[in-house]
Structure formats: structure tokens, C-alpha cells
Amino acid sequence: MKRKIVVAVTGASGSIYAKQVIEKLLGIADQWNELCAVISDNAREVWKTELGDPFIDDYNVKIYGKADFNAPFASGSGQFDTMIIVPCSMGTLGRIAGGISNDLVTRAADVVLKERRKLVCVVRDTPYNLVHIKNMEIVTLAGGIICPATPSFYSRPQTVEEVAATVTDRVLDLCGFDVQTYRWGK
Image 1 (cartoon, rainbow, N blue to C red):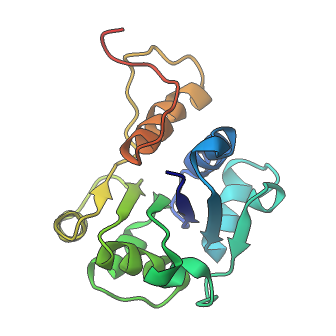
Image 2: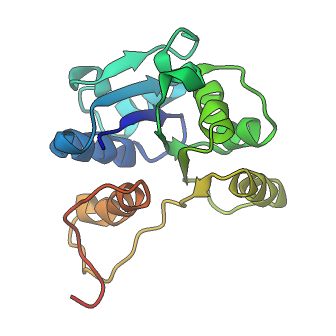
Image 3: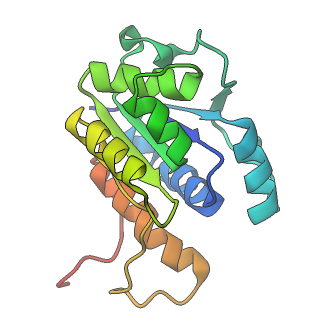
């Protein structure tokens, strides 16, 4: 079964993760049939600061504005089954945990949770305070997956991109995609 995915990029540091997730999804296009994105204003600034690369607008992905509630993933009837928020700011996580759907990112997350579909929040801030931890608990209890952008080093990554890939490959694994990556014990 092919899938519909939305990737949301918020203003937390970690644009490399968003870039890799989108590029890797485009590389496994045979595993999905629709890929959309929504990007916050802060995410655009952080991307430019951290990567200096052409922004996501240059990818073959349908991009929606943060206030575009006509986006197909703003309703359960759009049948988007997977949402990845990468990176997920603690402000975004807090609004999701509080049920505040004040923009397209939080509305889409609310829809995914209410429809019992897959939501993966790649939180990037550190350290966590108790409010962050409680918000992670609430989203987890609602059915979301909190995947901190914490790299692993089993594969002995040699570059920043390889370190980031230990996170992005894990995210795609959590979403049920078949990705070629380092596997423990092999």
C-alpha cells in the first residue's frame, strides 16, 4: 500500500534532519504516492543560517503555507497516514500537546492523532525541562512518537551528514519505510 506523507519543518535547530528526511523520501518514491510539506517562517531562516543551501522549495514536493487550512492533510478525509515534524520545536510540541491548532502544522498533527495515524516528532532542543517532558508524555499518550534527534555511533559515522543520517534513518524506520541503513548485529 502506498502512503501519503506530510513533512513539517519548524524553527528548531536541525535543518539537516529535515533536508535528509525529504531527500531520502524522494529517493524511495516507490513507497509512497503523495508527499507534501509545510514550513514555518522561522524554519526558513534557520535553514538558511544552518545550511546555506537552496531551500526545500527547490525539491519536487508540494509545499503549503502555515496558514493554508485548505491543504489536504488539514482534514482526516485527506487520508494522510504519516506526519513527520522535523525538527520539532518545543513550542510546536507544546501546542500539539495542548490541542492548540493555530497553524497548519499543529492542525495537521491534531488530525493525524485524532485519526490514529502515525505522528513522529523529531524534537531537537536540549536539555529538557519538566514542561517539555510533560508535553512529550501527553503526545506519546495520544499516540504520537517522540524521536529525539539523538544520533547513534554504532556505525562509526565519519561526517556530519552520516551522524545526522543515524537519526533520519531511524525516523523513516519508525514510519515503516524500507530504508537501507546500518543494522545492529549485521
